[in-house]
Length: 435
Image (cartoon, rainbow, N blue to C red):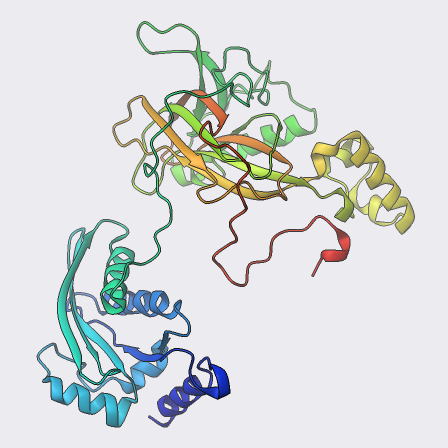
């Protein structure tokens, strides 16, 4: 218990102060006990951890006791919901030195989770106490309930990130920013298909002419990786692809690890711009595993480069060891010359967003969403690239009409929204800015 008291004293000393050392806002000291869960104590601990983490983000308003210290403070046998309020208040004042106590019990029935939570707050002149029931289902049940509980403790809604479907798709767009989004003129606008894991095939929909993109992930991973490397080094020709089958162990297929990316050409980026990505897709998704269409942002990092890619070394008929033995100035000269000849090899990813293509029914569906979700495109982004991606479950995925548009509703460049993570540092392309 001495450790718990020492932790609380340290937390009090670090509370934000206003003029002349007075607290700017009353900071509530909170203990969240692990929720009792008869079938799985681990689930109760996880839910309590999620509540602590979410509540702890409101620094200056709440100071949340960590899990290990809370374990020391927990009475033998835990805290039943039936414990008298007077006893809780006594423990909070005389033993725990907290102003808010949260405890309860959790039930898990299949995909449904139900938590009965009790909160006692003695930070004001009057004791405020409530008992409420929270429930959610599915893979994100714990996170959803943690949000509900914290909203009840704070008495206000939590910040909610933009979600798919929040904004209606515009009825009319301008010209697409990426050429050949209907795959009728490939390889224009896209990489050359390898004709094993990616192919342009006739549209299988009745009454439809034209072509669609087919990604196939049920392939022997080792044989596919060798083929991909041979393609990079010019040792294989997609016009004469190898025959690559599958394997019994599906975790050893392409679907189990890398998945298949089909990349567009480079699209000039516009800082402050907002975009829409639209597409059609048919392919079986499974819960948290679903195809994605990435839009990745890139910047020129040639000023930071100190080495050559495998492809460049192969073209120069040089091994990594031979390059490493060269004098520093000669290495810099080779890198500079290579960057001038092949600038695309020195572009590095600095931004990422994706269109989620969930499709449990395995039917053709239309997808559309705007990005960035908040604000305009960061100014560090110089180029965009679309990457159609499929992985698990192993099988066939069909895509069509993958188009990138400027948001037709936008009238002027939007300011860049700063990250919500305080410690995040944006990437830099200048040597002097490297940490």
